[in-house]
Amino acid sequence: AQSVSQHNHHVILSEAASLELGCNYSYGGTVNLFWYVQYPGQHLQLLLKYFSGDPLVKGIKGFEAEFIKSKFSFNLRKPSVQWSDTAEYFCAVSSGGYQKVTFGTGTKLQVIP
Amino acid sequence: DAGVIQSPRHEVTEMGQEVTLRCKPISGHNSLFWYRQTMMRGLELLIYFNNNVPIDDSGMPEDRFSAKMPNASFSTLKIQPSEPRDSAVYFCASSSNSGNYNEQFFGPGTRLTVL
Image 1 (tube, one colour):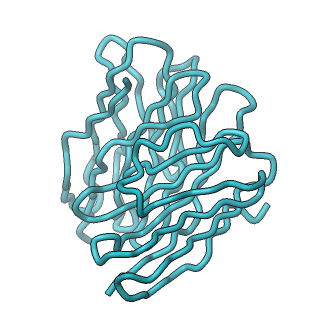
Image 2 (cartoon, helix red, strand yellow):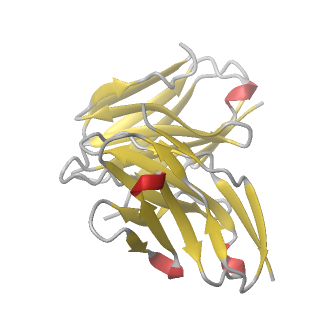
Image 3 (cartoon, rainbow over the protein chains, first blue to last red):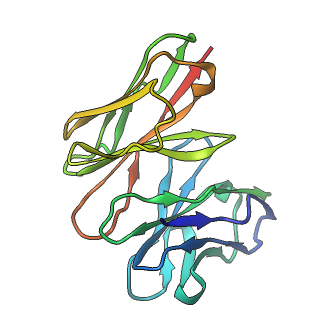
């Protein structure tokens, strides 16, 4: 069975600081990887996704993530965060061909102006 | 496209009452998912359907919970009888079987409060 680990539960940063949120998954086969964001009081929205090809994926709002197969990781990065990035971030994985997506427990990001 | 539609957006009910949550997936999507989100337990997958057939209901907490998908454009999640610990935000999501992408699109959620 596939699983996802997000080790940072709560991260507090000042505006303009750089962000890196960790995500590790366990599954030996082909995977699809996602980062979703949930702004306060809203539903989950897709930030970026990886299916194949270039392991460095660029998403919306300046976010990017790098798939490192040897480390089973898909960390989310942003060089300079803004107050509006305050949200909860979920890493997710699905194995190719199956619709079920397994979500991590989420990381709450708080950006201080 | 209107996206995934859920109703009601907010529901307040008393313990013991029946609660029905509704979801309309994105047209053309073949898979539908029901999630529950709480502060304590995070985001939990309750059940998902593929082509209207329940595939995995292992996340349904108890027999008080039931879900149906009578057709490709409508699903319900029912709690009978409801209990205060069922208070949560319930999200519905849908995805398409085409390709190999599995990207899920979430609805706005139903915030359920059981008094």
